[in-house]
Image (cartoon, rainbow, N blue to C red; front, top):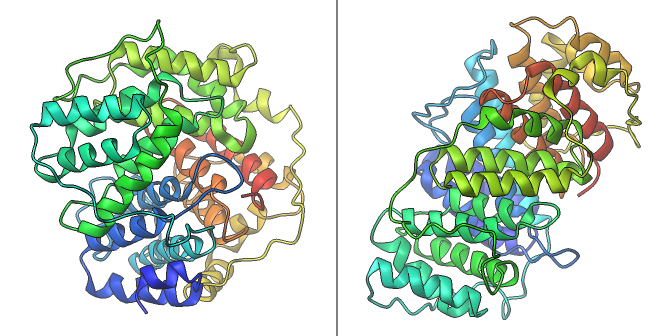
Length: 423
């Protein structure tokens, strides 16, 4: 049974085994394409936003942050975590992360075959500019088929700069009170399979259009300044002028961490040249509205001041690791080599770890970050997504110089303790 079949049959063991085989034999781009194919079949029945493509994006970034892996992240330029772990241990963690992702994609609600993604899209011939106009008009008129057909034209023959930019612009208009309307489309576009992977590529675009026709407004808000030059990337805006807002987004991270997640997707898409300065300022304004409380100046947001504000975050139940092929091995070397820090992080009382943060030095942060990646993925429920997305988002804001390491560590720790067993 291949991964996609196992995914739709909700067979977690078969899905994980299929991905394990691919890691040792397939091209990395093919692995991420089939994972996105599975994510494209996620039907969110309770709320309005499917999160599976978002969590694919977050775990992919986590794996890249840990450095090169021949089957998952070859030649990555990230290597953000200067971990002192041996290469074998580091690669074991990366494989655990992709196994966790595969398991998650079987533990979600999937579309019924007659209602889910279609593959018989009309691949018309049109110029990129005409396809771009049709894409926008179709979404405004709530025509998912028209937008789907136009998106295929925009992504088949060239680097999909136009699609990436128009999606960023349209979804910036009304990102909603949790930021979902911007977070999900940006994350999906960042992981869009290459057109050579035909079925995953078309299915993921179908998934995006099904979402966008529900989220993109029928007309542009009056105060929103559109950019009509979408064929090229733009110069990123200096975000340090908004550092106060980014700091507030992780201190007041909101329901399931959405404020910090939204802040991160704004920062990342800005750095990729997808947003004009006006778009960035508009989105930061939306983020401030979502935060709700008055924006504190950065001088008042320090580790000491935030620690003093008690946070009800005791574990609600016994902490149990998700059983995956790599779980036992990882648990064994954790308890054998690094049990001191790990034990503090999962201690029943949060103060045990929070007070230790004040004594960490520069050599400790990479291991702390690695362990928080591990906590968010190895512990909790297979269906959980927000803890993973939040953890990667906050640490990437650190990498961008918008959030200090000690405050990120504290807030990730508190969010995990509060929401580890939520969806």
